[in-house]
Image (tube, rainbow, N blue to C red; front, top):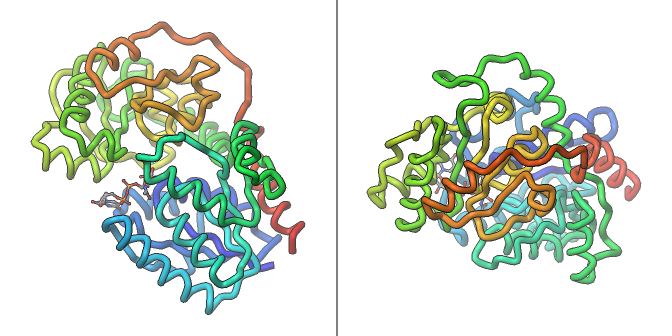
Length: 350
Ligand code: UD1
């Protein structure tokens, strides 16, 4: 069987890693990189560190407004699909690369499987929410990470196409966690005595009041804060005249995945608006504070390891300084073998 994966943005490279490994010897696997992310630290380093073979095709689309970026991807992916004629197209998560690949494939009557199907924030301001809903309804097979995601799909009339496979990010994390446990921490911080922060959602970065509230909150925390700055944050902060410095704040470049995992393992807490990082923090049992009105990963909140806050200084400080949550043995994100199940499900439909 010939399976073609389309990826383009940082979290998709992480999801691709265990799937690519699980494909070896079982299916012909073609990897297409749209080029949505292209910086060394946003792209190449993930392929290297996670042992993913170089993409078979790189469309090098780059950044742009939603329409221009998604449209260019659609055109590029269609051409690749016409040439390669896969049996299945596998799309990941909720980025513009995901939606473009799903649309390109269905127009050519090639079956589409959506990995990480059924996540919902119910917030239509998020581009990811448009991408998820549209991709789920376009797809032939919905590979859901959790029971909650499967219930959302069922509510939308998609139960028959849905299979719960578990969360592939748990697969990757489990392997990397054990590998990096003894590695050194980032420079200038000591075990348990710092926080890790990432902020990149447009609702937080592109609004001067929100961004100021977040930066002021991070600066006022009781331990050093490593702010691992996504390019979008760096660009918008400069444009809005918000300095990413002061108080406890230490702004740094994004970390490669293994270094990120090590940094989160040693941190007293994580402050983020990233979907993946909230969940990674939970899996590593580091308390998370999420600067968003809602989350797709509701289990992290229900189990007490994640608190949602507004982009306001005092709310952030209060949430981050809360007592450590109660220990839990719950495993809502599966047992670390989701990727094998993904391949099983695709092969069962050859
Ligand atoms: C995208 C995804 C988001 C995901 C995030 C992970 C969409 C709609 N959003 O958001 O779901 O959580 O990736 O990081 O697909 N840039 C660079 N170098 C790069 C990539 C981006 O400088 O390698 C800058 C550019 O100025 C670009 C901006 O970052 O305009 C935003 O990049 P883009 O890919 O449009 O969206 P993300 O914010 O990264």
